[in-house]
Image (cartoon, rainbow, N blue to C red):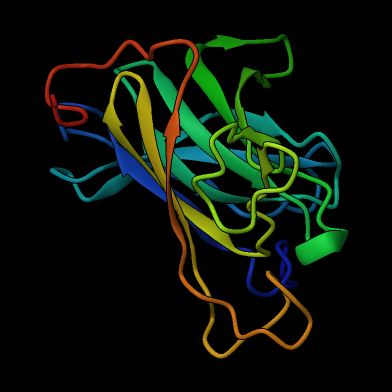
Length: 197
């Protein structure tokens, strides 16, 4: 059979529900025949060792985008990193959205809520060396991890694909950068998600 998903567009985001009785996996790209610019979110039953089925679809802001990660917040809410294929000064879109598995439209598309714009992070004290004008940018091609630390704090990092270059300059080898984000609105965490501090 012909491939229905481009090369290197398999499961990119994967997490469990808070009780760890379900595994959720999101594809990085659109499957042939699905609505343009959407990716599938699937459920896997680890006890039965079988796929349960399609939970819904995530709609990109632009069909050329990809996902970088999926992370649990509570039983229904999950974080998704959505990013463009650019980096450094050319980067235009690196965001974290929240989806709710119980909120889908008639076509099974999840509604999404912006949690963080990674190209427009307020840093009024200039904590990051690359901050300019009170704004820190996280412009890497492969932003691939978000971890919920507590209701107001996320840890985000990139995969530097060492020795890739371009995130902080055309000739600069990419580092793995770890950033802490303080959210303006607290997440509703399930027990066991994040670490109280």
